Length: 167
Image (cartoon, rainbow, N blue to C red; front, side):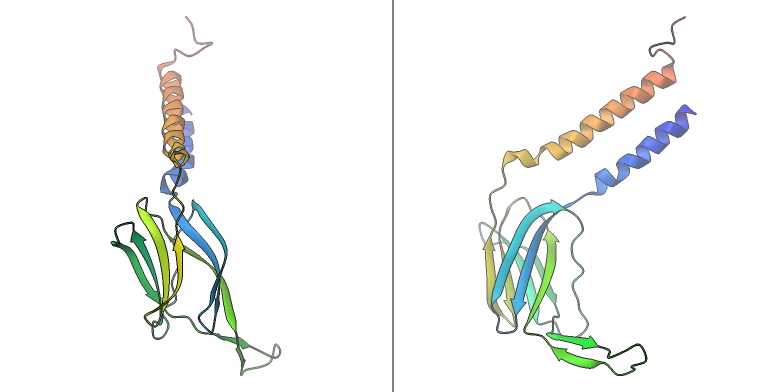
């Protein structure tokens, strides 16, 4: 029974080890190439899937302080939506959009300095990343501490020398 508990606890910890930091941008991108930043966060999550159905016309770039390109990802984005008039409709209406609002999750780099967005080789957005405070480190420590507590508990339960097992 103790081994089952141990493996169950270990399986519960696996998602913690797979969590990755991302830069999350909530952007409104307008057809006229103006961009509005709604919010920015550094959070745990997965990098966005970048649409590539068609010709790539946009590009995200992450740069270090010395200008080194850390991440470069092109993608396709259009300003059209397709709407069906009813449940029996077979031909959608094409609706032209003036802007697209979305959340973009880009990979986190500790030495990243800025993020840029290009539309057909023209820079339309640049964001200087805030310097991260040392408080970002405890997540690794927390995982290590949790793992140490779990292993100590398992060792005590397997050895039979825990409280209540005297004699």
